[in-house]
Image (cartoon, each protein chain N blue to C red):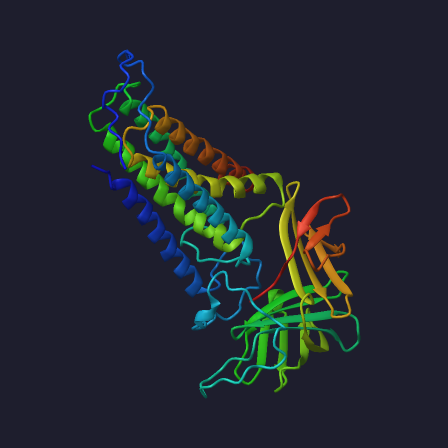
Length: 232
Length: 197
């Protein structure tokens, strides 16, 4: 006679795990301390089923959105956009996925902001970040660029961000180095240039260079970080 | 195919009672649990490594953060795991125990496992397999290993005629790994952020 209790135990664990994964995948952004994501973003509604965990975004693969066979409502195509403010003082990068957007504004010295929000079907977006940061943007009809304004701490910049291909885009690393909380954000431009801010123990400073191919960042003190592409 | 371990050996050389080697079970008795364990551990690690960590997952009401929830769930699991060790000693007669110690062992194990599953799901879904510090590396590695070892332990329970030392060793391994996983996560959390909810 074989005992079946252990099998039931394993199955129960598997079912529980799958249940929790599905809850996670469907609730989207919850309240979590792991995410330093800006608060006050609107909750995503009815995310398409393609947003399953493990589903990697494929930004920049297709230059034009593939025509949909059915005339249903369709969110703007996924993609990554990188550009600069019109006064060339800071970089802006936005990643779109499944009708949601995450943006990063970074001047490479002290001012940065992560912003999040939904993308409307007409390609417009109003993203919000911490401390009242705002980004109003609009995707052009052909999906070639996003233009708009960013407002952070009362200052406002106009920006244009053309569509970019991997490895351009926005990257983030949050970790702990010798007990110290480290949070870095980078924007890699199509020409290979990059800006980034690394905040260590609440002190923002110019970030060390990020290797866009591997995501590796070597800190001044020899510590290493791994930055990952940011997706909504 | 099965071999009757009690069949008399041919050749007629004397086999002293209780001194002969244990009957050799079919290799599948070891192989299947070992392969399943490897598949579970590698599969979890690969999932955590390959997919982009989502960063967020739903939180439970009443806790300040998901890491606090996980630390308490992990601590609960460790508590039941300690009960596992004690009840196992009772089952094996090394400690005086009640007649229901076997049931206690089974159910404390189930609870410990089911409490640990949500923690692992959150780890792998929201954080992924990470290597950015020694603590995190060992936690990632052993966290995956734990579920593999646990699967092996469960599958070994279904086999009979195993060497007597095997289950205690595998069970002890599962317990030791869980302890390190707890030390590198919940204890670290409590020491860093204080014992908070």
